[in-house]
Length: 381
Ligand SMILES: *Cc1c(COP(=O)(O)O)cnc(C)c1O
Image 1 (tube, protein in one colour):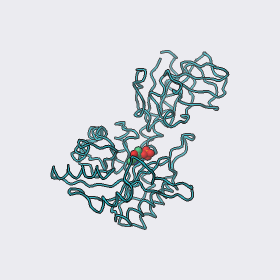
Image 2: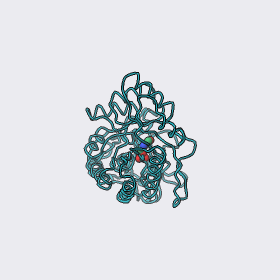
Image 3: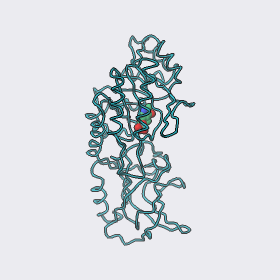
Image 4: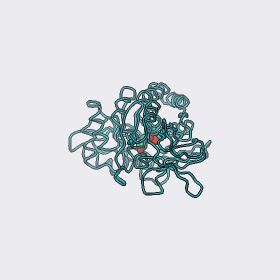
């Protein structure tokens, strides 16, 4: 039996990141949200392409310091920052700290003055944004993230000593398509300039990824044109975005092999090595992870009839479902399944110790080549 393996295609990642960068107007700063995938190879690949990294914990600060020594993170964010967290961010020389509440701002101010430093901050605001076309309102409801607009205005007008409020940060939703993301960006900048005379605005991440269509991509060109319009209206404003999922989701795949196929009360189940303790994304988001089937050379074991299957892993829970599909074709014991779109919020959000199975392996390369090589080896070796 071969252990499941994560494959990161770093060439594809570089291509995707360059396409994102090229679609944005040059003044727009592109940060990568490390929490989507903090893999060292991913960070190294993105380093020459993005303008900086957004870290959301001390662990991510440490990872960046290890992988990219000498390059201070662009932003430090995240809820529930302790004194030690903000001290670590100041020590790391992060360019901007994103502040989540008035209490956090006071804490940061006390620390900065006590240590004779100053902190450049963006205030995270939970702003209601009306998207008439989509007939929905984002933000503006009770949330642990960010400040109500009135609190943010108060903090901007009367910051504590040691604090330099440079502007506003907003990350209101995820799964936004380009028109919606552009509407949010424009509304946030309008508000930030009108209410606090912001010199900098970070409009967050959350650009959508379509797990039903591995070939689809967020419309970066359309979004870039919309941001160019925003810059035309506010030429003095430094505009920043911080996507995660939309940058790395497509560059990762989770490869595993079929241990068993069985029929249960009329439905086919395909049991694979590994499971959602390696790839929690489908369980977390409630979707079917797209996959391709690479038939095992010389396999003579049982196969499904080509109809719909539920693909499950090795965990003793009915929630361990990786995918369900009506189009995969016959699947047999030994076949290699390659789950696409496993490059973001995948291994790093997985409950890896549940049942104490072995962790997956990791390698870089072309997904199809790795899958073909695996499927060409005899099953059970
Ligand atoms: C998670 C997060 C991001 C990245 O979101 P994606 O959906 O991965 O693009 C950006 N900013 C903040 C504040 C976040 O919490």
